[in-house]
Every structure is written in C-alpha cells, then in structure tokens.
Image (cartoon, rainbow, N blue to C red):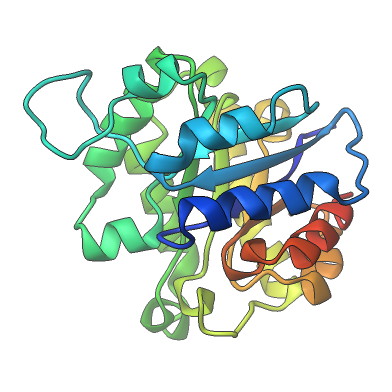
Length: 253
C-alpha cells in the first residue's frame, strides 16, 4: 500500500517556544500510526533541530525543511544546503510550493535542480504542483500540471521517481477557505497518476504518494483522504492547531 501522509506546513509562523509547545501538544495526544502511515512536520529552518529532538523515538514521524538551495555549498548568503539538512538528520524537504514559485520566482528548471540535489543526498522531496484560478477557469489545469511534472520530474529514472512525494495544491484554495471538492481533488490526483503511468508505467505510478494541499481541515480531511488517489494532505493553517492536526492524522486511510 502507498504511504498515507499527513504533512504539516507551518510556513513562516510561530515562535520557537510556540512551535515547541505545539509539538508537545500533538505528541501527547492519542494517535496511532499504521506501518504505511507517516506524519511530517515542515518547520521553519531555525526550528529544525528543536523539532528533530521532539520527535526522537517516535515511529513514522519525520521533520521536513520548507526549502533548500540548488547548490551543494558556497557563497549563497541566507540559503540552506542539503548537506546542512543531512547533518541535522532531515529526511524530507518541501519543494516548489506555490508561495515559493510566486513570491521568489522559482521556476520548473530550478526545481528540477533542487530535486536532483535532494535525491543525491537521500532527502525525499515533497514536490508541489498546482494551478491558479485563472487556469482552472479556462479548464487548462490538467495541461498545466502535466507541464510542471514534465519539466521538473520526468528526467528522473523510474527508481528515482518512486522516491518523490507529490503534493497537488490548487493555488485558488490555499489560505482562502475555499477547498476543491473531493471529486475535483480525486480528478486531478487521478490525472497526475495517469501522467506518471504514461511516463513510467502503472506499477511505478501506483507506488507514488500524492497529497492534497488546499485548506485541508479536520472537517473535510476524511472525505478527501478516502478518495482512491488521494494519499493524505499537505496542511497549512490547520496544522498550527494541535486538535485539528490530530484529527487530520486520524483521518488517514
């Protein structure tokens, strides 16, 4: 069975003390993870070491960076390298979030470089893709997302692509309170899996986890996650509330 994943994206929120308390609260609440289920916390870079210490000894719980740079090292003031992440024992990094694409002008070619360097250092990319409202209104979302996958991921081998987690995030549903219906989410997730199958075959495509990211809450997580091609969520605002995120974890199939 594919990994079912509840991934928290804290974005640029919380002080160190607030983040520590949030992790304490979540870890203290009752939740049981099956062998195929994972919880991932994507925390701001200054909190990575604290978060790693908080989850020590927890099964199937991991910490992710929210970004990394495309170069191994060098004169890139303010950036975080994969070697730095490795030295902290970080297993995952979020790449290509719509906010990185929009505000920091990250393009598909740069993201391909970031994917490559992560895989070279045994870090799993959580690769984000998704369309803006204007593209959805023109009914060009399938073509747009396929293009993102092709330019950033489809140079990978079949073995490499299985090390990727994909997160579909309809940009029009991030932080807006709007959510794609479960049917819309399933339709795009099925399209992504079909695109993967065309490139790598159905067996490989069937092994890749595809998360939904777009105003996931405790109230809609169960319906979203139980769609056949939705393998969990990349959760923003709701991941900052312990009781909400625990409910989302418990909604994993």
